[in-house]
Amino acid sequence: MVRGLLRRAVDGPHAMMFRRFVIVGTVAAGVQTALLVLIVEWGDLQYLLAAAISIETTIILQYFANNAWTFRTSRHTTPRGYLGGLVRTNLVRGSAIPIQLGVLWALVSAAGVQYVLANVVAGSSLLVIVSASRYRGER
Image (cartoon, rainbow, N blue to C red):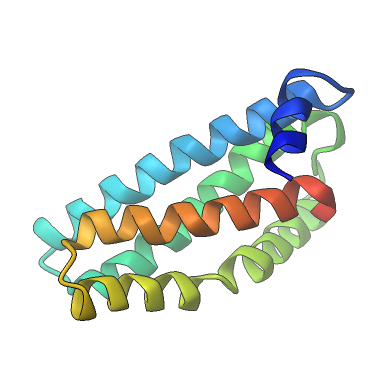
């Protein structure tokens, strides 16, 4: 599976789209981690609430970026299409929020991992799963 995904990033009819999708996801992961730290440290919120806010924010950011750049040939242009796509994206990606928060909580509470590192581990494992399913046909 990994070999196939990597091969598609280099060759194939959707190589550019796949690379853009990976770039958007990677940037969003960095933004999500930065938001988490800012909200916890400066906003003085509990790390799980801050994680939920930062995850949802980056879900929306990814939708806008992917719609405008990654999938520009088939992007939503009407208000109805745009809103429908945003709702579908939130349903798909938002369904992973409880899992990511559960992994984050387990790593911090049970394993004693610092919340930023735990967030990276929880997020990157879900990023791979969501990215693979997204690339295979959500659009």
